[in-house]
Amino acid sequence: MKILVVEDSARLRDAMGGGLAKLGHAVDFAVDGAEGSIMGRHPGYDVIVLDRMLPDKEGLEILREWRSAGIDTPVLLLTALDGVEERVRGLGTGADDYLTKPFALAELVARLEALTRRRYAQADPCLRIGPLEVDTARRHVAVSGTPIVLTAREYTLLECLARRPGHILSREQIEERLYAEADGPLSNAVDAAIYSLRRKLDQAGAPPLIHTRRGLGYTLACE
Image 1 (tube, helix red, strand yellow):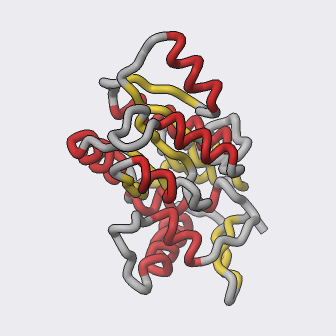
Image 2: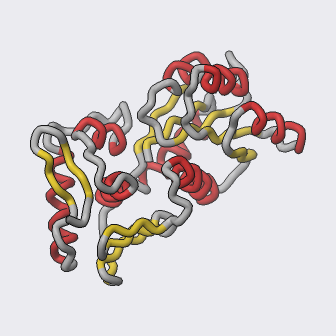
């Protein structure tokens, strides 16, 4: 997932960023409402985590601006306000989910993955393309029932392609979802990751699934 976190607490940003990065997710941060309001308008994010109480701008005000501008990226509100009225108000403003502080990282990840599945109209956490199965809930990959061990980056790449089977993703689109703004990729990073992923799928007995569309990008399909 490509995630935007709008959060003013450096401690919380570090905790979320470290945990999400270990799972292979690309995370960008906005440290206040003004920055978050601008960054949230970028269409490349799969989901946004928005702190309700920011020092310069109320989170619900930012959310209203996004929704009024037609920004439909799923938003999870993060807040210490846990009253029923506050949750109803947040959801009524256009939030897709609501998580109160303190929280467990595992629950945050599960909620973000659920929002991403909903965004791509995939109620089933298991993505199946031919003999390939990608279980996004367990981050488990198998070919004809045989598990494949992938690095966090390889898994993220595969999930990115599997969520859009048959669609061509350019190298730039893939880079955007694999790397945060602060972690600029090497020039051949995507090609190297594609090569490694193809090799592991081939070793597991999968037919050619990742196809290069010269001059356009890559697609995952059982042809």
